[in-house]
Amino acid sequence: MAMDDGPETPATVLWASKRVITQHQRGTCKQCRLDGGCETLNWAVANVKANRQAGNRPDRYATQP
Image (cartoon, rainbow, N blue to C red; front, side, top):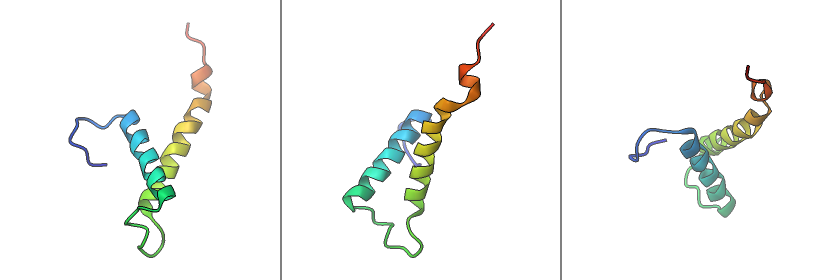
């Protein structure tokens, strides 16, 4: 993800992933015309899935001393 707005944060990566998915819903992705599907869409879906599953980490519920 190339951005000139500063360091890459988890929030900006998630935002970019959601934008990629939205573009594909509207049919405006220019990379999908490639053979084998769109790698950017695969990245975006995997990133959103990992982010949603991160809330289920066991260490999230660990009690602090």
